[in-house]
Length: 217
Image (tube, rainbow, N blue to C red; front, side, top):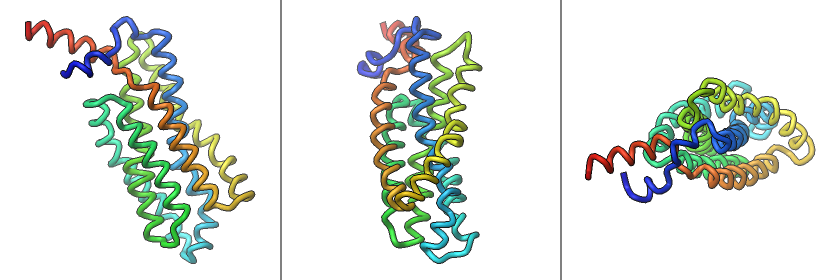
């Protein structure tokens, strides 16, 4: 383990601490923001179908591709989180969600629209705001690990309660394209900013660094 990584690690005493609870709250916020990618497509589906002149089945394809990308991306984001800490996949997720919404909201090509959902919003975006956060949460709690993980995962479902009505009102007021671009900017800035608060490595990293130092001595 490198010296910078060890220096960034948290002391074991922070397990189940107030700081751990603070991180949990940030994780819920980030997951709620990232969940927007899953709950916006059903709301704008009628507008997308009319805009691109496609059948209802074709208009639902972006959502299917997004979920496939979300599932595959979770595997890679989990590996990144294990190696570099959760802040790295979160930074990638912020860029993916932001660029995905903006590209999808400005393109005139239905093919590009699908690709933006599959690659940017799913593979690189939303996937980074789910599995890495759940895995990271397990490393900050011992006595209340189960409830902590449940609270963290609830951010995904909280997004299902928050985003559809907000998106519906925004689409009615400004149209789906402006809504997508606005969501891209908001999510990129918010997730990217919150990711900075998650840079400290879990306590287990500190313990591993100490063990390696003793072996090397």
